[in-house]
Figure 1 (cartoon, rainbow, N blue to C red):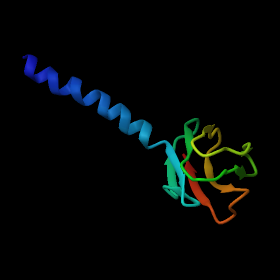
Figure 2: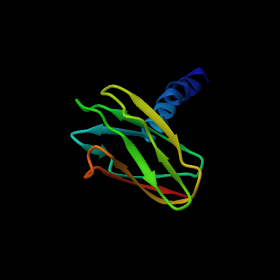
Figure 3: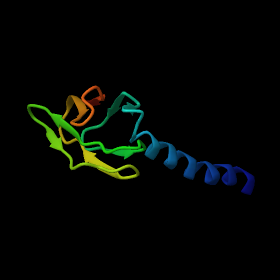
Length: 104
């Protein structure tokens, strides 16, 4: 009986880590990775600056918007998407950076 429960207990922390990993956007090489993501309304994305320079990200939507301060290399910022729709996340400093966020 103990053998049945042991694998379940070992997998629980891995599943929790995988769920957190899906909500992290990495800024590296002047791009967002991944470049497209789908989340539920009310969920958050954590943006991690793994570049050698600053980023300042924003969304300018009709019903939803945010604009961050400049974030240095190694800094994170978490934004909660409170509205459903598709939003384009951009960087003021690097205008070619684009992330599509689909919020259901």
